Length: 297
Image (cartoon, rainbow, N blue to C red; front, side, top):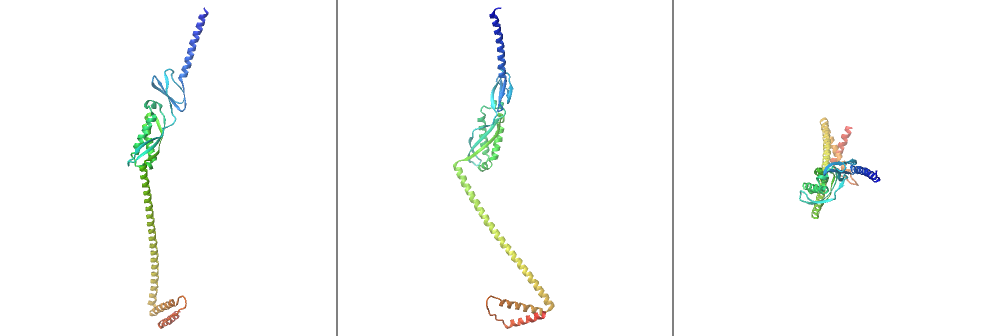
């Protein structure tokens, strides 16, 4: 056999072997796909969706399947957006919003929407305008938490077909134009003045009520004292009446003489030196009283 023929056969055999080995290596390289934890890969076969590869080692059919899209599943934040809205009481406000979302079903995001960021931003703007249009300005300011909750729920429902989960939707600020802000400030000052006037009036009213209660209490106590005094005098009169009934005229004369002595005693009481002129009838009264007292003793 010719040496050239032998070399040709060897080279030909080695070429087939090398080609086969190269084909196996390429197949392995194309068939094995390692997907990072933060991504999902969309695989197509002849232009159609074949599979969605999750994190880890995955296998596809070489030369038939290809990774068409590499989608990050990390949470994303849309740029802060500002849009005008009109409240139900016809006040123009400028609303700043921010949205956070993440892709949960890449096959929907890839094949159902071209610009997911722009679509979500437009959806949020429309929902914010709609919800603010249902509320008055005061309600927008005071019920912001409920407004954010409603916006997030509606956005989540509308973007579900795009394989997107809205994790957070925030209304960062609600701004007013200068004219509306000045009118609100004037209204706020008027409301503060009204509250101060009402508080002062209520304080005066309460003061009058307390004074009236104090006067009523004093009158009640005075009336009680008078009733007690009247009861005591009635009791004393009853005792005297019994004494007169039992002892006759002598008891009556005794009481009269005793009252005269008490009256003269009070006349003699007083500060400084004074002269008391006692009529003759008074002296007789003293004598009668002493005799009666002596007789009773």
